[in-house]
Length: 395
Figure 1 (cartoon, one colour):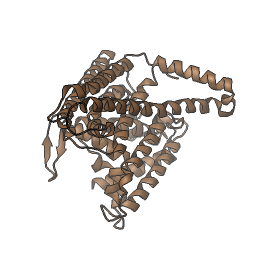
Figure 2 (cartoon, one colour):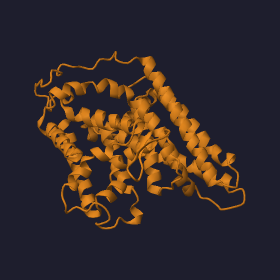
Figure 3 (cartoon, helix red, strand yellow):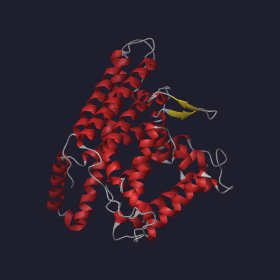
Figure 4 (cartoon, one colour):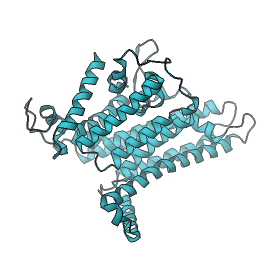
């Protein structure tokens, strides 16, 4: 039943994007639903309550309605080298659409992009099976799954609902492949880059880069929109590369400290695969802190969209005139909430890293090898608090 409902909602939203109003994107339900209700709102639910995405995922529900599509292990085997690299690529495409793409508020363009993503996803499921593709190629199943492992509610292998401490689902000592290391760090980098885009520092970088492109004559060929897209795309690519380099450099230093004693020699990538899931609470904390205002303020538009989803003048439930009220939440509350979740998220991350250190250095030095990771986490705490403390600047 839930699968049929999710497919019906998916079809309805695509129809709204393709056939609803295009002149006033804010009047169309699709952009608000995708960027606010789904990406931000569902992220909050998965992290603070539990992972509900498997029950709502329309990309898994559609092929499940056709008996010819293999569910699990009946299709072509997924190559071991693939890891979750398809999900890394598709998540970067999504991040580009969210942060860079000039047409991301345009309903028809957004609906078309969703259909392209759907075609890629269903092709992967047809080739490898539904569940294998959800584990290696569908980025939102992986990301929301990571958020769900942080959440207090989970299901056991027998389907029983259990209550646990926040973050404890990430403390099982699982080693992940290199591709998952890159995906987790990229998730952290992109949400941080989103916040950085609204700071005066980025505005200064953007102005300098824009003048440079103009002096080179590139603006003449690209246009102002093309030049802006190029600068933002460059920043989006450099952010994950920088974060991955910093994380691997930290793991290399940890390996050097751990290898001073007797015992098994550890490499930087080996430690990275053991420690990377400890970064998930940090990514969640910044997701909550950065997007709360967007969820509360812009989310109010959804009440109006319920009555007029296509933006054509309907008022089905008497809520079409609802507009966002900026006084719903105060600046003091937002700051205190952001401060609390960032500090709490980093504290949980440090606890997870400490557990990982005991697992990885059993019988040897524990404190010294984990100091570089502690410094990295404290440094990122300061960076996160600095971002949310900056005045908001749009370029």
